[in-house]
Length: 276
Image (cartoon, rainbow, N blue to C red; front, side, top):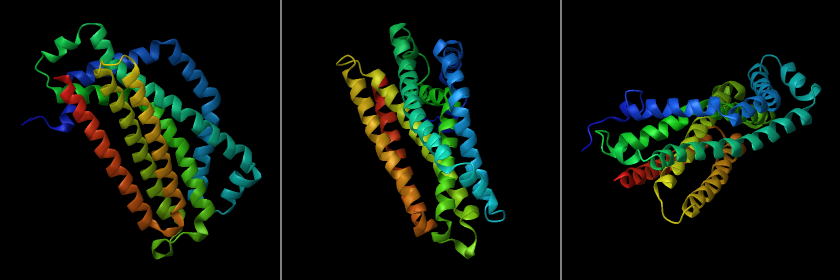
């Protein structure tokens, strides 16, 4: 039995987390791709983020200030703002997914190419500390990127609630913007974290298997694309059943969370066995 608790493995007390996180941040900040990404985010993503935040604020204000939704969604031009938000959300998600997959895979591949993987295995660190440490460090290094994707999705959740507010069943007759929307934002954030965790887990386990050259990592990435479509379906399904009430939204969300958690746990367990 392993005596190390999961929270301890996720903290900087785990040397794998600390070392891997600092290395990945160094790669991101010093690389030319990192600079290009920052410029791209500032020019293209920032307007979409502002639109998403505007939608969310308007949703919370609309029960007491109905003009808020009119100004932001109608007078400012619904189609241009909504279309830009949709384009940037669709464009950012695969980019962030690719970067996460590559960064997590490189955390293992770098050790193998530098002939330090065997030394790492011979330390007092066990397989759980090594695998979960690299997985967690990969997520921490890209938390800002995943955070931007989450914020963009917040705008869609807010827009759905505003447009469907008259059809939504809410407890005690309270506005849906004050009851259902906070729940949807939490659900969206949890989906975002689990989605990123699945990508990082697949990247790590793919880099550990050296058979078939790049074939196996490609298969894993193809599986990730498929699961991304499934995740998108679950998230959109959650939005489309909003008129059915909070209970149905919770049930579908819990189903998605449990499914994600089981898959991530299974992949990380396989990776731990591959450490040897």
